[in-house]
Length: 433
Ligand code: SDX
Figure: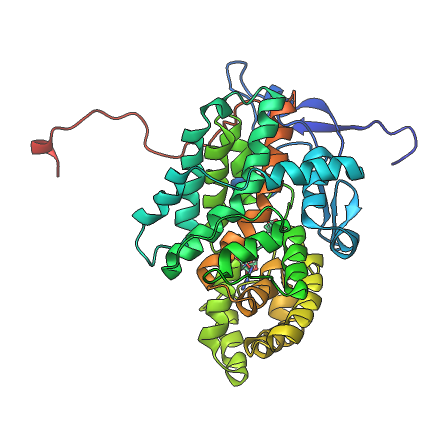
């Protein structure tokens, strides 16, 4: 900053010749409300910022997750994602994201105990899945089941009570794998397998999914660890579309179950968490490495979108994609190589050297390789967004609680610029053209 410079902006309104001084805040921002003083006539509403899709708007301050999109940096509560993926486990990272600090041994044991003993759902919720068609998409079933949980815990509406919030948060972290497994078992026409408390969070999930009959199921430890790492990588990602949805619904003081069902709806979209499913469908459609150049031409001609590529924030390689790519190699050692990997690697190789992608900063994101692992683990593509929603439940809840505790926040209600018809009189149907 220049010597003797003030940390303000001077805005000159050339329509009136007036000048306004506004403070520059943390993160190189100005308070949008400081623009409202800029008027031509005293009776004017005052100036607003216009920002469709909030591409340049900070909706909140936050201490949960830091991303540097230019450098490909991702940290949860200050800890680099690479260190957490290497040295931690999902429930420990969940505690970090929810509480803000890594737990002591006792704190972690208590948290794991609470989560473990909240994995069951009311039997009526189990029967809810029977009402769906066999081919119902797992995300549709999950969104219904999560919002149904709000009817079993009406006290969750008291969102201003921290101890009540914590009980609901533990329930959601604990029950998401159970609901997901029930959705999968319904889809497969298999009987539900209930939680087993002596298993780890991820092993219990795999057991509820894949155990057949009374034969004891114990997942391969490499696969169990790979899924745990994937859960760590998907736990939070600051103000993405679904986290923003969670915050907006939660700002009306809706209960966390209904807020989270809304966030899941946003995640389900193929431009967001539904991209991992869309990537697999894209790779299947390409079918063979020899078809990759033609597909890339289709992308350049805007006939196709390269799913799993690009990101609103990362203008470099998504750090999660690098870790997932390494994890994929470990999984394929056990499950055998997924033939679609060759197509994915060829797509990446071409895209990273084509000006169309390089000039638009399009790199693989978290969804490009994750689906290959999920498929190798035996999941159908309809489960892929569900595998994103389970860990992201932690991030959504952390963002939700931070919003409720933030004294600057209130019910979200953006403005608009009206460009429709001016006032006009009603015309009876007989007189209409
Ligand atoms: C996630 O926000 C998060 O943090 C999300 C997430 C999280 O953890 O929560 O990281 C998870 O959602 C990852 C993203 C998954 N989605 C996809 O992989 C779907 C494919 N990617 C895109 O549709 C797109 O890249 C987005 C949605 C991810 C980002 O879109 P932006 O930031 O709005 O960028 P844009 O659409 O304005 O694209 C800029 C240019 C455009 O070209 P021009 O019109 O300017 O010439 O890049 C092009 C786009 O057409 N482009 C693509 C492309 N992504 C952008 N062209 C081809 N293939 C793509 N994938």
